[in-house]
Structure formats: C-alpha cells, structure tokens
Length: 180
Image (tube, rainbow, N blue to C red):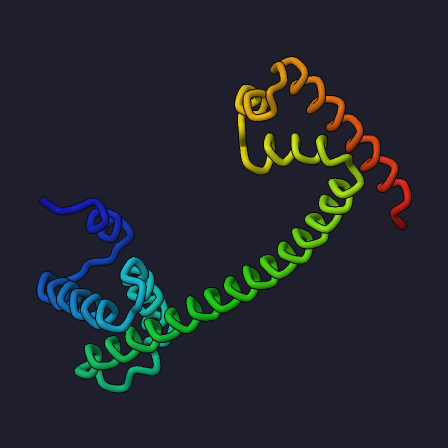
C-alpha cells in the first residue's frame, strides 16, 4: 500500500523507481548514523540530517559523479553536525556569561540590601531587634518567642507589629533621601 507522500509525488508528476527509493532510504539511515556519532546533543540528530538534505538539494548541481553521492552526503552531514555543536557551545557560553553577570549583579544588590537591613536593625532598641531576629531570621513562632521571653503571646504580637511599622516608616523616609 503506497504511503501518502508517495501519492503526493505521483500526483505532481514525480515518480521514484523502487530501487532508487531504497537507495535513498539507505543513504538516509547512513546519514542518521553519521549525525548520531557527531552530534553532542542526540536530540539534534534529525535536525542535522534535515539541514544536510537541504544543503545537498541546494548544491545538487555541484556533484560531479553520482557514484560519490553517499560519501558526499555523509561529509555534508558530518559538517552540519559539527556546526550544530559549535552553535550549541556558543549558546552555552553566552548563557553561562549571562548567568554569571546576573549572579554578580544579584550579589551586589543582596550585599547592599543586607547593609541597609543591618543599619535599620542597628537603629532599633535591643528588645525589638531580638524579637525581629527570632521571628524572621530564626523562624521562631510567636508562642516560642513568648515562652522564651516569659511574656504573653499577645504582647509579643503587638511588639512585633509596632516594630515592623517603625521599620517601614524608617525605610520610607530613607528612600526619600535616595537620589534618583
């Protein structure tokens, strides 16, 4: 039973003899093997073979001896596979450079933020600073802080709330001093 592609070719007046079709399929399988051996990322194998076929068909007029088609096709496939490897390496290098730059920028921002937080915490009284550190840095629950300080939980919640509001006010006023 003929396949769809064969029907489309026959409708357009193309006809490929069975022997030549078999040879092309064998050539295709050989090109897949060459690409599989050459390409680093195995998901690029079919892309390499497809690009090789495009090159073969666009340069068909430069083939001098038809008997050397298989060798020529394999050479083109190998070159295309190498080009794909080169392109993917460039992409990896560019991605790594972007990631390094982003990490550097992130660490600079993080360091500046940590400095500002330290200054804000340093301006607080020791009890308020301790409450915030227990709650947000060490991750203690309000009840654990209340038990450790021998104070009712409602007092701890109120102190944490007032201290946060105080910090927000200082942050807003310090942002107004920043040059734009």
